[in-house]
Image (cartoon, rainbow, N blue to C red; front, side, top):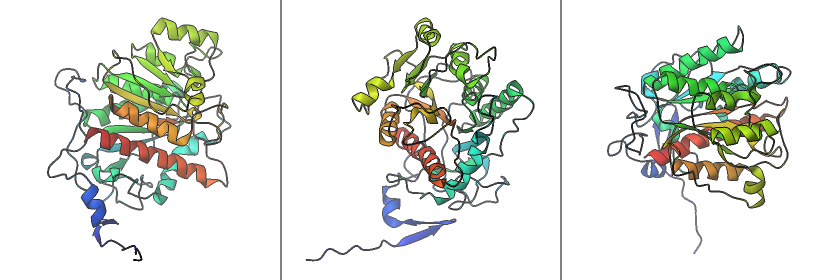
Length: 351
């Protein structure tokens, strides 16, 4: 007997069409809460809210308040901030080392490319919890001033009990993302850092706010650090790992054995912020100004993040040091897809 594919009936919701089969696979919002921390540990001081909020079945179709193109803007209308769980924050900050690159245009390129994504990520529809895209942070006036602005915006997002996603920009923005959590009163959390470089220098030719110092600035805040994929570090950085108790799985171990799952230390915090520097990938996946051979693969990174999400709660994440290439929009699309895939991993781990 010939097998014939039957196209499913669809129901139009807002600006998209979702099949009945897809809706059956989507967790019911009538029976389950939207993404919420699965651990009982308190991560916020006093009465400040934890990162948990019931989300609507699909993003609201109320009038957008963001003037520019939002993440998945061609699929869903921009919801109100209060109605969205995922909050995307464009951060076009670039330091001295990468001023000649296109990193400052990365947030806009990623947002534009997200219009070509499917709302169904292969396993679920993360966008049903709402994705609100903020206006880009004004990064003029010097690095430290820009970092303070970013931290303030992240703090506001976290205090709203939302999930912050930073679109860099060079790697130093990760410090501001973490500082925003600290300023919002979040305590007892760690940072998981995927990168080619350790970024643990105390300064870069006298500049303490270079991207090569970002993880040093973070451990200086007494935030525990776990590194994945590093394959370029100095003797100074190796010593910093020892002094600050930084645990790691470097690329030579992960890549040579095709490791797709990692086990975090038993004493590592149960809540983490995830920093994804595009250099963590092998240059064959993402060419970038800071690329180093011998990096992680596409599927490997996603499965590693999945294994992490099964052990700890991810409170937010960022993507940094992506630099769009003229005439090659494939990489913009891949960066947007990476962000959406991580949203899906977070959603499914928390439900």
